[in-house]
Image (cartoon, rainbow over all chains, first blue to last red; front, side):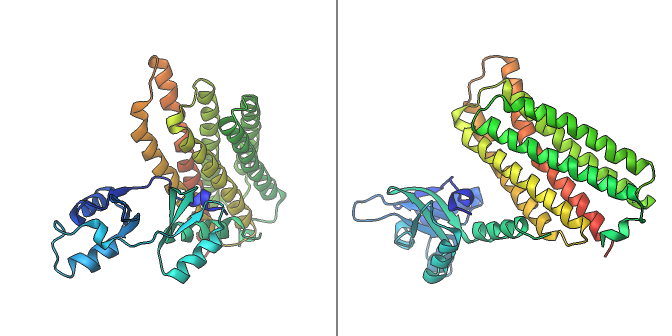
Amino acid sequence: MKLEEIMTRKLESISSDATVYEALEKMVGKRIRSLLVRASHDAETDGVVTARDVVFKVLVKGLNPLKVRVGDIACRPLRCVSKDESVQNVAALMEQTNVARVFICDQEKIVGVVALMDIMQAALIDRARNAHV
Amino acid sequence: MFKRWLRGYDKEEAALKAMHEHLQLMCMANDALGDLIRREETSRAETIYDLEREGDMARRHALSIIFEGAFLPYLRPSLCRFVELVDQAFDTLEDTARFFERISLHDAIADECRTITSLNKEMCEILRLAFQRAIHGEDIREQVLAIRILEKRVDDLKAEINQKIHDIPVGDFWQGKFYADFLDSLTTFSDHIEDASDALYVLTVSFR
């Protein structure tokens, strides 16, 4: 199974200058667990912010999410792979680097994202499809 | 396990054969629909209509054998329900082809529609495999779960299409109606397959 078949093409993003509260609003509103953080300055690179980052780096530390920049808590660098990469290799990369989502890039452009949940579902479908009668 | 469904007569085997043929024809029609929508091979529409007619014959054959007394009486309603659900899916598939012939797929939603076609095809294959496993007395819970996952994906794509559909220009009432009907039947197919897989699962579970 190729990544292209299981990746999410609809990427939700936010500017790195936005506040964590704005990111929270977006995540809650769209019921998603991560956002692509688009760099708003040349000195920055794109990153990703997850619900985990928001909780551990801001909320439980008692920081005000209205005053913290998303760019300051985003994880970088983004883990990018080609859309032709196999699901097994991506799973191995996730295990090695301890990340839960990998971005799919096509000539420097991010075209999708694959999360652990997508890989789990792909594995389940593969098992069901290849069951021997 | 499935041997317990049988009473040792040929009727049961004939009914199962007809049911399997029905499923197989639906999978073939699904392949043809994939060619029709992905590659716009219009000649494939006729293939789908022919397969649907053949499928109707297989369904009638399966049901008539069951009504003639195949299987234990308490199994018959569940088996008939499974056959009818597969047939509903088959009819929906045929409708999709008919409506597709009357519209031109807009670029804004073309990718989503093509992906749904692939997912529908995959669901169909997995249902056929589940049926084969069920008649061999094997567990089908993995197939049922896979179908549920795929159905959820179709639902997500349906939501994306519904968001984009407002931007699609519609010439007149009928064009709009055919477009809406096409999208409705394309996305309803997976619901029928999920219902059929649930019905099959209930049949297998009743023997535990």
